[in-house]
Amino acid sequence: MIFLLPTLNEEKGLLEVLPKIKRHFPKTKILVVDGGSTDRTKDIALKFGCDFLVQSGRGKGNGIIEALERIDDDEIVAMLDADGSYEPLDIKEMLKKLEKNSIVLGNRFAKENEKIFRGLNLVGNKIINITASTLFLKRIHDMLTGIRVFRCKTLKKLNLNAQNFEIETEMTLRSLRKGIKIIEIPCHYYERRGETKLDPFKDGFRISKRMLLERIGWYG
Image 1: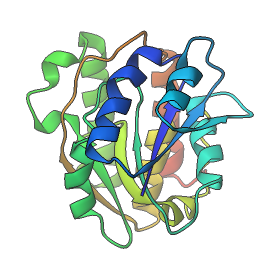
Image 2: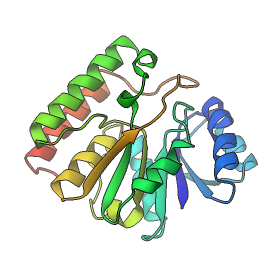
Image 3: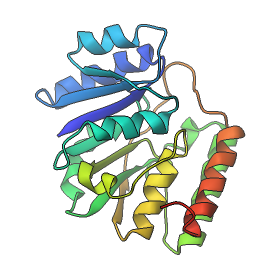
């Protein structure tokens, strides 16, 4: 298994999450894919023995796609945001649910986590989840979750192309269109460390557009 952490100026988050990964998964590889950090992200990643990849393009989606191209098809990937908002220990339960042709998502709304969300983000997330569930006739509780487990070859089948924060939307909805099983289990969720890079209006528009175009099969 390999941990995949996309980063952009996440020195505070890495100081939170990397010690946890090392404690619970001491022999597991960690790949940090970076979008051009100007803080101590690289130094911290290397200090903890991570492989560090500077992506050639811009955006979270671009970094994840580039990283997946460098990972062996048969590798199991545990992907999580590097901002300290997720609990790496949850990966152990997620691995137990992983099937041959599935993606396991951590559901932030299955625990008492709603107080962590800021008002606009909470409303936006719920609207997005309801809309996606309606469009795809499948109950999706947390489409935008930043913690998920999958086999690399499963994701490569999807021919991902989302460049920014709509990457999780593309992963989830295209999986449903391609007949890949989505499994959701409860996960912990904490206050993020450092500043968010997500723009609720600009990225919210991109996510909504992606949902509609995935529904009509516009992409791949």
